[in-house]
Image (cartoon, rainbow, N blue to C red; front, side, top):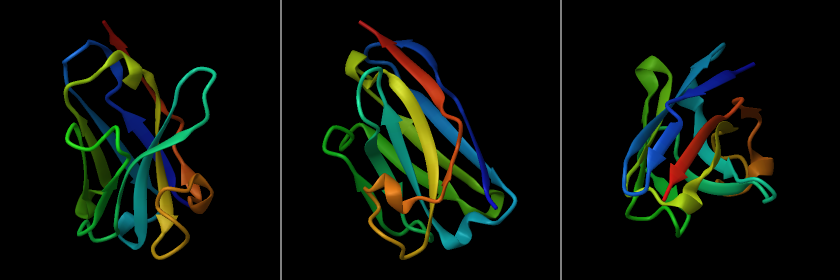
Length: 125
């Protein structure tokens, strides 16, 4: 079992930055691809970014390219999402998720076995 806990969300203004963190316990993350997803009120959960188990490969949704950066620290079981130039449309609950390395598609939420409880990000205009 893997337990994931996100932190770092909050209320910010448009143009500000936030860094989300996700800490894992119960098992080392080094064998898992990691992803960030988000869900806004009334909308489906959507892919934000993913990183391979060694951190060599990263993937981003189009809206995240150039603004968001995913990274990981396997020694400390941490995954980060640095978000810059935030926009009101980035307002959502952000979730961290773990996917067995090589399993499924990084952008498909069904490929992820473990999820955190989410952290709220609110961007005011």
